[in-house]
Image 1 (spheres, rainbow, N blue to C red):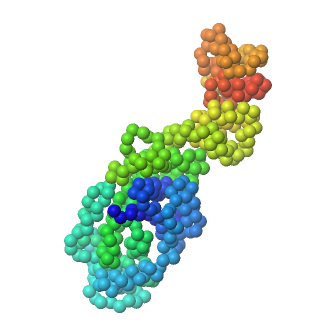
Image 2 (cartoon, helix red, strand yellow):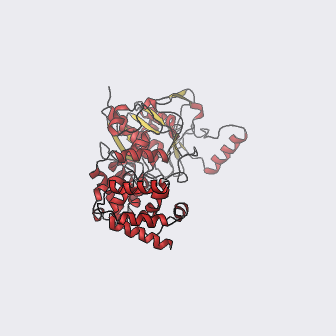
Amino acid sequence: MKAIVTRFAPSPTGTLHIGGVRTALFNYVYAKQNNGKFLIRIEDTDTERSTKEYEKNILDNLTSIGLEPDEDPINQSERNEIYLKAAEKILQSGNAYWCDCSQEELEEMRKAQTATGKKPMYDGRSRNLGLERSDKTVLRLATPENGEIIVKDLIRGEIIFNNNELDDLILLRSDGSPTYHLCNVVDDYEQKVTTVIRGEDHISNTPRQIHIQNALGYPELEYAHLPLVLGTDKKRLSKRNAATSLEEYREKGYLDSAILNTLARLGWSQGENDVFYMNDLIKEFNIKDVQKAGAIFDITKLDWLNSQHLANLSLESFKEQLQPFLQALEINIEDHEKSDQLIEAMRTSDNTFSGIAKSLIPYYKDINEYDEKAIEKFISDKSILEELKVLLNGLDDWNQDNIDNILKNYQSEKGLSVPAVNQPIRISLTGSTKSPGLGLTLFLFGKNKSLERISNLLSYLS
């Protein structure tokens, strides 16, 4: 059995897109399942839009999320001579020809085809003219005019293309530069790629590239065309429906493992367990189980999976990864005397590190503002707060059980609901109605700070 080699081939014209991470992930997992190699190729022939900054962003992010290539990445911009040799080989074999049609001539040809209800495509008019190379000619592939190309797709089965619907695509532009299709085919051969896993938007490119492979005498490849990543509006994922770059999700405090978990579920589902890690994926994934329909990226699913991955972290690892988000808010985690208990209690306060860090602000800094809607809803009578302040002030042994007993007894004696008693104190401590159990929250703040904050709210209400 031949060794499997897959590749991810991004263009460095922007930061690493979340859909690109999904493609890289499926390539990586398929290679690892088959004891093969995962490679990266930078398709940077678009010199106007490609930058080294974007290239670095893509490579750094892939490595840091765990999708590291098994060989050094290659850059298409450094391989021009190899492509030109391949083009010359196709020309010499009689499978390519020079064409000098002008843009105006091609435009007229397409208009005439459209007017008669035909598919607009190059009609091969220069094919048998025997033109010589000049600064006005492009090199075109002589695509077979009859027969068909059958693409064996691991996800979609056989996809059949009639050759008479494929025109003679350009291999070299008039300035001598190679086109995407030629570079792609040559690089797959040179990198010994066996399996091309990419988005379904490339399906129409595949028969064209197979014709170039055939003209060069290259071996057949395996193909798998993944469903596109869609937003909740069922259109291609864009900034309208969610952040699209990997960096944005990391900056919000999503774990790499949760991002990969979510992306693996985009178009593939198997078994009952929704929460898994890379090793599980390599064990369980089957490319033939990937769906054909578009895969919807739902941020609520990512939120839920992130909360599960956060819960699986040890306290030490959790604190370590939370640290940068606290530092951004100018909070030193050790400034709280019960920091471990506090972090443990607040671990589930939000779905992301960023959200958890923000929910910790009241425990480290004074309250600048209160939730006015919460005050309006829960504090119609400030006498409850005044009475609770007196009761809490008289408590000598400040522990969670004693605090809970005071609150419960007061609620029972006064015939009040739990929110009527608890929420006014929560608002005084945190500025909002969000916190862990109130007895624990009061314990974590300590007696003096708790009483001070209740006094501050009473002053504010006055």
